[in-house]
Image 1 (cartoon, rainbow, N blue to C red):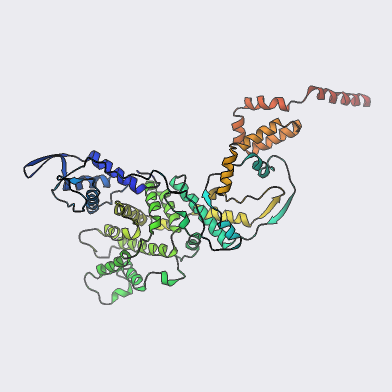
Image 2 (image 1 turned 60 degrees about the vertical axis):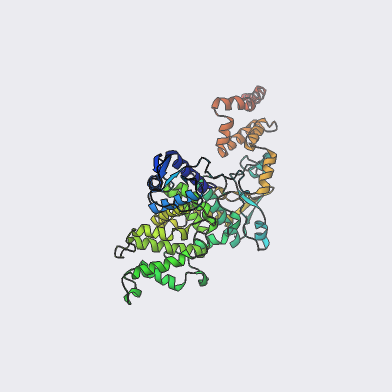
Amino acid sequence: MIRPGPYRATRLWNETIRLFRKNMPLRRHWVHFRCHDNSFTASEAVDWLHELLKGSHNFGPEVTRHQTLQLLKKFLKNHVIEDIKGRFGKEDFEDNGQVYRFPSISPFKKLPRHPPAQDVFIPKAGHSGVEKEMMSQRMLPFKPLVLNSESWKKRHSIAIGELRECQVMKRREVTSREMERIWMSATLTRLQTLLGLKSLNGVLDTALLSPNYIVYNVHNINKQGIVVLKDKSEDLPQWVLSAMKCLANWPDDGHTKQSTYPGFERDILRTVADYFQELDEPLLTFQFYDVFVSILGLIEKRQATSEALQLCCLLLPPAQRRKLQLLLHLMVRVCKNSRLPALNSAVGTRMLMVQTFSRSILCSADEIDLDELLATKLVTFMMDNYEDVFRVPSRLQKAVEEHIAHLRRVQINYSGVEASPLLPSSCMYVYEKELREQKAHGSQDPFLERLDGIIADKELTAKQKKKKLKQFQRSYPEIFRRRFPTAEREEAATAPLLRRPQLMIVTLKKPFQRSWSFRA
């Protein structure tokens, strides 16, 4: 299984070619009284490669013989194979007895040496006030924040016992633009986590995303969970909706009570297919091609794949999401309708639906050699998990709601301590400038520095020092254990500092004894 990441389609292409060249059985063939060793016929190649693709987790058993034949045509065009006369470059490969061989040159595609520019999320500009200032900052996904010693002292002074002057203040109301930013940040962070990537760089161009799409797709839905468009001009034409409704409800829809004829349902399907196949771009849009191909790398983990698809479908323009929902709903209904006559004599209904609409759902702007196979794999999964794919991820919604509630909650503002502008751990994005400053300081363990500072502080009394160490241990047990992995090391390091001078004990006992004897 090729894991998620940049250039996954290219890596799949190279892996398929590697297995084909390494394991394809080769033997001697005679053509026009001439012997050709280490060769194979076209039909032998189709048979063997078809079995390889069906048994691969990257493609699955849905791969058809026709799709395998199309792939071998691309192999011939890209000089992965050649005929016995060394000819290639055309897609004239047929399922017959013509003899082919592997060329001596390497057919693998080269991956870019340098990755694209750093993945950056920039909400779309064009607003004023606080939102404009927020959007002008370049942001990038980042792990939990690492602070230097000075920042740590300011933000965690309460945990170590240094109470400051405070006042109760109420945060301002969260604007719609800020809410969109929170949804976008949480969505991208969760998607990056599911894909197991350090960055979405090379997988998704976040600069082209619109934060308001997510909020719209979450809140503007009907009882069936399908997006409702405010601008009806972006919706499917009425004649397409009528045709889809007729086919989905066959034969109970009122439209079919009028005059029908044998093959009427096939003509309806052809009408719907013509509309979707003539769209300018697929329903998942060209810009999301790489990220959906990467999600296929999680296909063995059904729950993770479903959640990743949920997140990516939330990023779609509402009009595209609605069309995708209606089309998949039609495909699922048609496959489950036992009363619907056969729509094709040679292919089953399920495979017909996948073959007809897969490239209307997913394909690349450029010619990608595995487009059809990858689209088949994705559409099959989306059909099998239609109800889950278009749900709003509960984990994402909970994280966003908790953060918004936190922003609206009454806060305690301590003097000298700036309120943290960061989102919670599930939405951890920081400003690029702050990240560069942290790297420049080079402070990796400010917590350990603070702990050592408490131990070495000569101005603290033994009682104060012991109290602060206990507070630190309760607040940061993992940091404390790193400094003192065993009880012996803790005692060896702290005992000399916490031991009271013997002279002080003697001076305290004498006044007490005299006072007692005086009363006696």
